[in-house]
Length: 178
Image 1 (cartoon, helix red, strand yellow):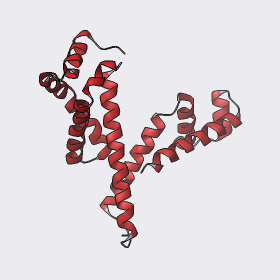
Image 2 (cartoon, one colour):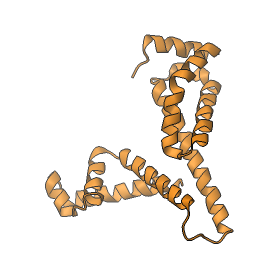
Image 3 (cartoon, one colour):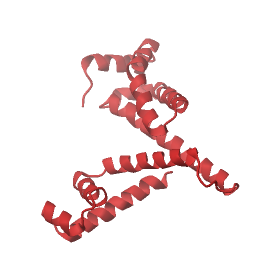
């Protein structure tokens, strides 16, 4: 997607170091970025910090903005990457602290971790190619058998099994970053 004429002008001004252009970009994208990050990290203060980090990165790398096809995609990619890095760091910190403490039976933190894990899994499912995602949902969410899915989609049972294996690998890879 190409930039609109007005957006292109703002990007060029920002790339040249214009603070008003940065302020315009910040005011336009900050609420959306913060909401997006909040959905991932589930913490208002962390979402605010990470949102500010997004715009700091944009300012630092502003001279490269004129080469982008979509500023919107770039902003959300930075937001996603910073959120994932935060969740990964949080997980490593938790693993380290748990290695030196007895495990509690159940805590609010466990529930939050489960919700974060669920979100990561949902993001991994949404990033799957269409047919793989459909097969995975039919198998795991609708509890259909592989041969039922194959008949419904007019494909072989082996193809269904291959898609399920690839889907599970993709989910495991997404979870591994935690």
